[in-house]
Length: 300
Image (cartoon, rainbow, N blue to C red; front, side):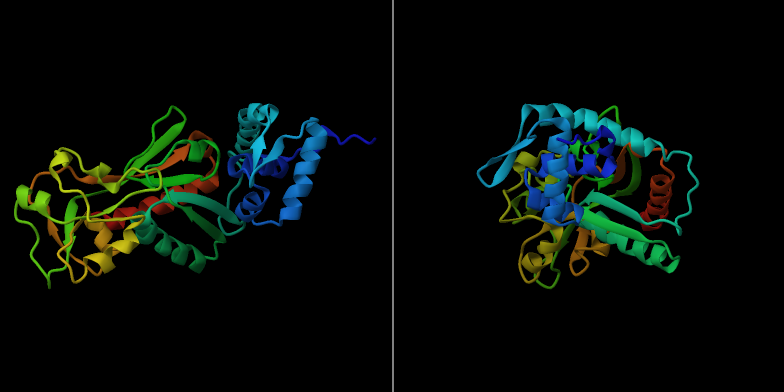
């Protein structure tokens, strides 16, 4: 039987391995990487032959990694990180290369920054492809596993390999329908109001950004939604209120009225977050600079 040389394990093959490991599915891995299922299956077959292990076994509707596959996760990620590090210091011209980036963020940063970024860069002839995933309260493993290369979030994850930079600071505001009612005038009226709230897929809610107040006094929400874009239809024509940053009025909550909170509350900062592997990559540095420039013009 002919053996496949280990040098056949290039970066694309290793990326496929990590994607299958993260998705537990050939079809989901194919969707995420934008290739056919047969291409993923072929690559998986090559990996199994080279490594002498099945790597994944079928379990119900998905795949379960073997002990060997689990043990390989960190070494494979390290190899990919070192391969990427080879680009540090390389000549970089944003017009001459295709840039694909996955970004974890929620509605407000996505809508305020990236449409303008894409318009600007397309006018300049830059070939930039953006893929967004919801960040919720983000997990640093999203960056460590290279599931995304950048986060924009008010709740940046911690870690010695995680870098962050504050982009914007904005006060929290009450969003409501002025044609239907006035905003609450004091803390007690705010607590007694009927609220609309965003809760992320991990079960944590957007109220986590409210600091310096006793949230236990606030009435439980009447409506809980998965993202900010869904808020306006519930608030319009009702006595419901939502509490979000002032900046969100320029994006998902543009159709609602807003008023300051009737009590003291710390403002909210939005951070740009990335993994240390991307710090010195010239394309990533260029992208971060462009995002900072747009964010500076949004500051309230």
